[in-house]
Length: 149
Image (cartoon, rainbow, N blue to C red):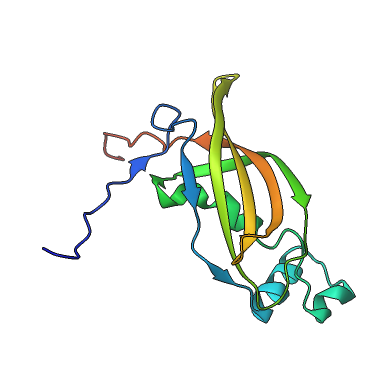
């Protein structure tokens, strides 16, 4: 059928299915006043510059953290380390997008981890934030095969 798209099968995120070098891209996001208000409330930040249309620098951090959800079924994760380099302010009315690339995966003390390098840009491609984060990949628990008595 012309113009139809093939269905994409999402794999469960595991150390084995994850590929170093894999790239992710978020959807565009228009920064609205409610984003700034909700984020400020969540992190208990009511700095006066927020009223002037400057977003908290970590506003789009969750966009970066959720990149892996565009290709994988993610049971759970745990932030092990986050690094940010704030290059330009994110402002009200900007349309932003985050791109990321898996740069490492490893096991430490029997636990799987992934490292993603990311950049958040405005619609013109100007870099606003760059950094990397390390997340523990928490596997889905095994289903029990017995019945409760």
